[in-house]
Figure 1 (spheres, rainbow, N blue to C red):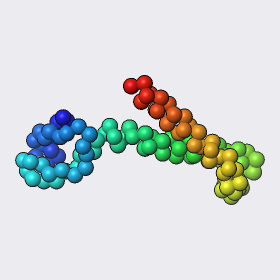
Figure 2 (cartoon, helix red, strand yellow):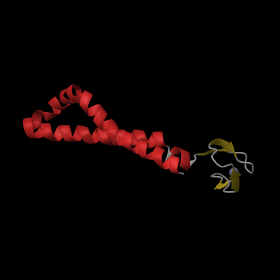
Figure 3 (cartoon, helix red, strand yellow):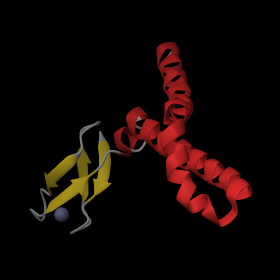
Length: 112
Ligand SMILES: [Zn+2]
């Protein structure tokens, strides 16, 4: 059981473990939303997407900085083309850290 506080009347409400979504408060009958931190924030898919977006933006930044050294101010124009040409290499590269995370996550789950 999880004990939470109603955001409207601030009464204590007991919820089953692992449930989340919209609920009606038994005291004030107002609707409130309860998001399970455990399943939403530490969801492996959410983290997978976060790591992927992070590595993608990092790679874009690195490509841009390299082009900035090569072409100066024109780098802004060239960056999208270079990303497009290099995408067969860059996309797997961007996926790699998230795959490593998912792989490690699975190993951890198997141990437990
Ligand atoms: Zn309430």
